[in-house]
Length: 390
Image 1 (cartoon, rainbow, N blue to C red):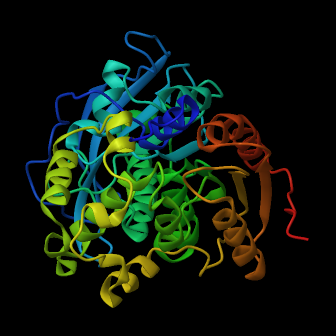
Image 2: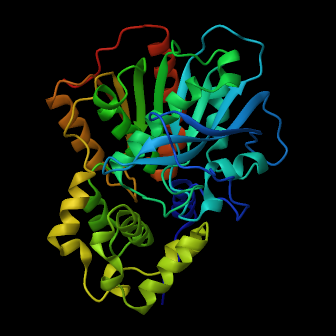
Image 3: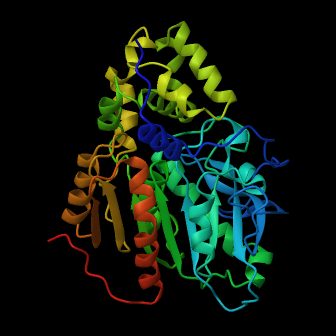
């Protein structure tokens, strides 16, 4: 008999998926991108609500902006810029925020859910705007814009996160409210957002050095995709493996995912691309990669090469990092987070590591969010940090 996930595991998967109900797709850019990464293609007023109709005392804009694919080509990404409506005009801190997994359909994009109060991590984002900080939230490549979402492709995610900060600084309305090129920048994210924010931290020096990044708070990081896939094969997160394979295939079509899928696998990929996947559906789709494939693509050299290209820990973040992970995380193994800490520390990075005792995936996000924001507040206040690598 198929075993259903426990309530806590279901909640954990809900958070990692950042689930939203189906909603209208965000407006799409009508022209190809021109100019530089971070340049705004379109901008329109929107609203930000953690729950349906809940006021937040903010102004918000839906934007599309220029970014870069994993292979270096220009693309257009959508997102949201949120600024406290507090009358402040002097330069204020800016958080570029990376959400956890929301699904593969355009209707799942954070920007599509913010006006309706259905984006799962909006309550965590509201805690940041309550501090007087502006927040830029990327939708990532292919989520809310033409093309398929390149889910789990680290370089594309990290670039989209950095370019969202650039775009916020170039948005006139936000500029009038204190988001300027002089704004101190913090990078933040958990789960898929942990991958994206960590990639942004590693890429900052080479990709967006003009951003005044003071630090990165990142948690539940899938720093080694193959290890995460192996841990979830046969477990509750098995559906996420197929989502990740779909995202890699979107970025690198030469991988030809379709030739590895059986009929069930093709059905699930088609379903995922059209929906914000429900928790029970993802958790109960299948238990093993072999259930949806005729041959495991993760055993193939070209797939392994692409997965390794998204590994973290190969570059030193040039600003301090607050890294946190639950000790009993059932989706992203605790050992993966510890290894990222070790890799960054070995390269000389300033890392403040925090283990969340008995923390499963959802608890890691909730328990870690406020200390992570407090740590960023210290960076904005120019308080020193030496990390705890020793």
